[in-house]
Image 1 (cartoon, one colour):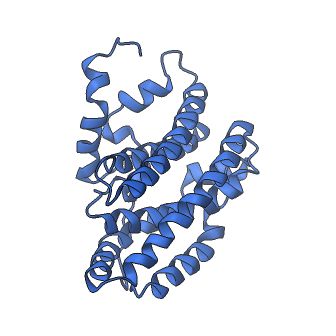
Image 2: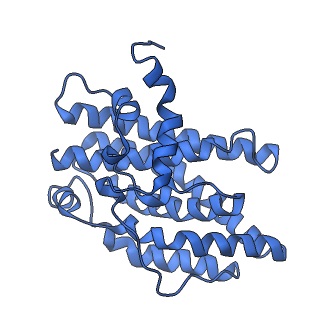
Length: 250
């Protein structure tokens, strides 16, 4: 697997799995307006993932690879998303705490990817920045609402943060693929924005009266296909129709 293809696939998979998780809330949101808001956020992320998967399929150099085969006919060890996005929704506080960390990372990352030497990626990034600016504004306001709301809402948000913080470090995981992308102008040094991400997210949680767990052992491996048990169940549902009717045309 060449590094350019793998780099784009990581971005695509992170969005695909994230959007799949968020769509599980469709029809189950806390109230109608929020149900629609989160569904629209999920659609934005899915649209980004589709464009990235199309780009990855072309970079693969294989005639029988398309965005659909990449989405529906790979197994969990072939997906390169972070472990954070595959975690279960839990209650609404858990979904929001997870999403706010992803949203702010995406805002910083895709802002820099607008400068990518990969013109397709740069174009996708420019569109993404417009969307994720709204996403982060939305989820950060919910963090404040949970943290400074009732005793129960604060406890639920704190429990979510205690559970999910250990997966946040993988957002900044780097290896040969990330280095190749940076050196060739395709990607960027994601750790250059780590301090800004940490400061902003920490301030957000502190102002919401939420405490980040101290000395959490950061989980990784997802970007190289080593996932938690949750991804297999998610893929079983997401891929079931396509695998049942592999020759179907929509």
